Image (cartoon, rainbow, N blue to C red):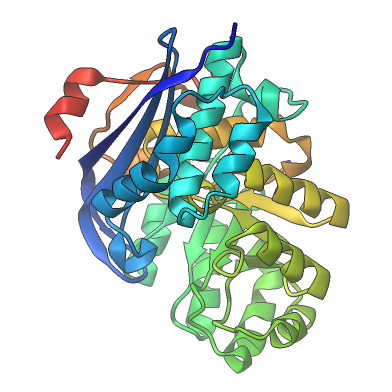
Length: 366
């Protein structure tokens, strides 16, 4: 007999950071998160989270919770999380993208728990080896970037690094060179310009990073025209990683087919698991690399991304950007979370292996 969904719960949380974080467009000392919890008739639970940072995501936790309740709760109650139809119904619901995504992730967790299987085994062939993860450096100066990068590798033990480049000059090259010399030749490093360069600046500066072993240049310019993006990508000796332009499967298809991106970022806040897997398959067939990007996730959100990465052999050797658990002072995660030797282990438990610390949840819920 099917174990149908009987309840949907949402929780709006504020989680403190260990220290102030300087993002591209905002500075914060805490994050606002929405937790979605689906509960089946037999007590299985599917859990997902989404950060809400209005300056970047365009929504608050309260608005996202309202979207989930309005557009998706009627579809979910009485549905079977093990049947493909509910995933298709969520995708076709017309709900805002973040609401569809967080529910999709929760459904995959619930499906694994109902079937008694780890989520990675439902997504792909695996194997479920520990997943390498990269630290994203948010230093506010070149010196801070170098110091934070060294600490991330030598003290925290991360496998790779993503460095922010915002000087739009050879100073960015000097920073990358200093980091490379400090962490050694074998660490995966890529850079993220957050679209801050002009095409002329990108063509003048980024080629000098090729000799430094930079794997990708993420969002070098804020371009809307695919032909312009493709022309720039052809002129750069390092693959362009499309992040902001890659919001959906159709976006990924156009970026790949046009040659505008030699790699794409999959972020679960905008694709969920289901569409994310479609993008990964598309990229694999085209010979294009995929990186799982961060959504400032806690340990709860980390494990959904780790399961996805572990399920897909085509995503090697790139580490995921799952690192933000190291910037949080606390969260509401309950379970086993093992980070060692630059990797996060994949829990061999049903679903994602993430539970909720109920006492903490009630304490920090708005």
